[in-house]
Structure formats: structure tokens, C-alpha cells
Image (cartoon, rainbow, N blue to C red):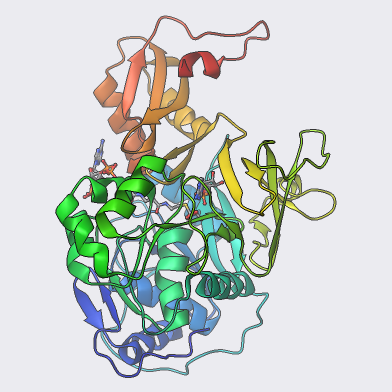
Length: 458
Ligand code: MCA
Ligand code: AMP
């Protein structure tokens, strides 16, 4: 998968200040993989460290499935992911007091057999993603999808071994891990992971290719000195949520670069992007990458005009698709149309020129906050497990920094907002906590008794 175009550069990969050559990384990965024998699936905490990168490379080289666990997950979310994925061991020594699985440390050096002969259809990763209700679902991502996506993006972005990729995104989602680590390894470009996605660290890294979510880009443009330091880059890429047009324009003004915007999902990987050699239009995500087809469909399944105006449900198919949700064949079937297209749940328009615009989600219960997808139902379940909460409803409200902020409307007995926020942060991932709790006497309901979330969103 990675043909090692790195030569022997001692700093081919740098994660939070720790540098390694590709040869040393691969050797440590192979030595680690020898400890995976018979494991089938292994879990790793997605902390932004070199050990996380080595663990994922070990899985790919040996054909062992890797489950990245959100670095900030609380015990409820962690237990679900470990149980559902069937992970047989944990790489490293994360502070997971309730977990009794065997632990395997990343070796300080070593070598091993190298690439195992594994078919392209074999699963590489299981990545957990939130739905409208219930616990996160494990998207099974085959090796072929990763290769197809990264090759499509290399074409769209002109990504070559001459690039240095810089970002500071979490290593437990597609953006930071598949694009941000495996993309660099597959293209043979240097990788600098900044540990945290702070504007001053982006500015100091001297890269040619930069990845960030819109929240990070809006923090970069709020720091003009850091933003102008990116003028020497080749390409600035935004994704995971809609890039506000004013942020796009400020990026262009401060860095001299119109950003490339791309769209994707955990289940489909990245499917649509503007190009390094094409138009970059504010508010638009461009065209399908090579190997991907898209279409828009009305609620009744009928085709709609590609007039740039008609908003309908976006569907995708092609070489970057996941295999299905682990242990959930019914949910997998529900996510597909009878003729084999994946229903994204996003509303979009397609123009006569083929340019796509993502207009929003079709469900009010999916929130995108800081680029993280959060299901309202999951947060509501966590809140209801607190003794002081009788009823609650969680919505995403517009937020200048996060895109949407998670707000919980709570009917309770002596509920303390700060305690409720900590309760959710402690059970789920910290990033799924409500940023605000509004104590109310009742929730607005329709004649059927269903909470009217549109009313709460105002
Ligand atoms: C705050 N903290 C707490 C609490 N409150 N800890 C415990 N309990 C609390 N109540 C701590 C946090 O752990 C963290 O610590 C620090 O305070 C700051 O946290 P927070 O305020 O949540 O951070 P933020 O400033 O809001 O984060 C913004 C961010 C983040 C950096 C932009 O949202 C982010 O990394 N977003 C990227 C999301 C992403 O990669 N999405 C891709 C998925 P400490 O600092 O020590 O950790 S989408 C995808 O993959 C698809 C395919 C796609 O299209 O890309
Ligand atoms: P996730 O399941 O965390 O991978 O999030 C996927 C979702 O992120 C998509 O269904 C979209 O709602 C959203 N998304 C990703 N990229 C973009 C983008 N460029 N513009 C708007 N929404 C996006």
C-alpha cells in the first residue's frame, strides 16, 4: 500500500515533535505485528502519537484489523467499541481502567516480515461513527477503499512525494487518520502532525499541503500572522463540515490561496472535491473524485434536475465505499438503495457544470460540531442516565467557532448544568458534551407527543 518513496529521510514522519524515518517506522510496525498473531482485530487509542501511527501501519502490513478508539472517549463509549469490534488486544498502555484485554507495547525498534499477502477486499479498519439514535456504528473499511480514495485525492490535489503534509487532526477519524496519515504514506510525502491543530503550529511547520476542519481554518484566519505564514504552501484543504464563505475569503486574502474543499463520510471516505488545477468556488465542494459516481434524489426516489437549485438527497457509489456496519446487516441494508447507492443523509445540489453544493443534513438529529459528527440520541441517552434529568432534547445551534454547538434542553429536578456537561463528557467522548444546558419546564411536543426540535432550534 505504501511503496516507501521516502528514501532514508530521518524525519519522514513527525508526530507531535517525534521524528522517524519510514524504514524505522516500518521495522517497529513489523515487530509489533508479530505480537498480533491470531488477534484478528486490535484496538488502539487514537492519541496523536507516533505509536498510534505505528499501530495502524502494523495492522495494514500484517492484515490485522485496527479499531481506533476516540482518544477522549469515556468508559461507556469505549466499552461499546471494544465489545462490538471484538478487539482481542489493546496496543499501548492507555489509561482505560475498566478494560481487561491484554496490552501490547509498541517496540522501540525491530524488524519483521514486511507486507503480508492480503487481498484488497479484506477489512483494514473499523471506524465508529454516530447515527441519529443509539450507539455509534462500526464502519468496516476495506483496504481497496482506502487505496482508491487516496489515489483519487492524489489526482485531485496533485499530491506527490515532493509535498510535506501538515495537520493536527485527531487520529481516530477518516480525516486525520486515513487522509492525514495513510495519505502521506501512500503518496510518499513527508508528514508533520502538529499534535494539536493550533494556528501557530501550522505556521511553524513549513508544509506544502495543509489539512484542517473549518473550525481550525476559522481559528487560523483569526490569527493573521499564522495565516500569512501559510502563503508559501501549495494547497490548503478543508473538509469534515461546511467551510463558511467568509472564512474561505479570509483564507484567500491572508494566504493568497483559495482553499480546496472536499466532502466525504466515514462510510464512503472522501468522494467529492475541488481540484488543484480547477476552479475553487466558495460554498462548493466540486466534483466526484475518480472512481466515484454521485446522484441526487427526491424523497420519492425520483431524479431531480442538475440545475444548481434543486435540493435533494445526495447518493454516492464507487470504489471508496465501506463494506457495511459491523454486526448490523439491517442498518447496512437501510443505508443503501435497491440499486446499490449509498444514501448519505446530506442534502445537496448539483449544477449543470457538475459542481456540488452541500446544503445540510436531512436529519435534525445529526450534529456537526468542530467537524465531529454527534448523534443527538446518544447525548440524550447519556443525559437521561443522570438522576436529575427527567426529559431532554439535544440540538445543534449555529456557532461561529464550531459550526454547530451541542445544546441540551433539560427538564429536571435540581439539575446542575455544569455537572450535566461533565456527566456526558465522562461517559461519551469529551467532544460530545453539550456546550450549553438550558433548563426548561417542558419540551415543545406535537399532537403525537414527539419533541419539536425545529421549535427548539428557533
Ligand atoms: C473541556 N475539556 C474537558 C471538558 N471540557 N475535559 C473533560 N471534561 C470536560 N467537561 C478539555 C478537552 O478534553 C480538551 O483537552 C480541552 O478541554 C479542549 O477541548 P474542547 O473545548 O472540546 O476543544 P475544542 O477547542 O472545541 O476543539 C476544536 C477542535 C476539535 C480542535 C477543532 O473539534 C477537533 O479536533 N475537530 C476535528 C474533528 C475531526 O477530525 N473530524 C473528522 C471526522 P485537551 O486539549 O487536553 O485534549 S469527519 C470525517 O472523517 C469525514 C470523513 C470527513 O469529511 O473528513
Ligand atoms: P462523519 O460521519 O464524521 O464522517 O461525517 C460525515 C459528514 O460530514 C457528512 O455526511 C457531511 O454532513 C459532513 N461533511 C463532510 N465534509 C463536508 C463538507 N465539505 N461540507 C459540508 N459537510 C461536510
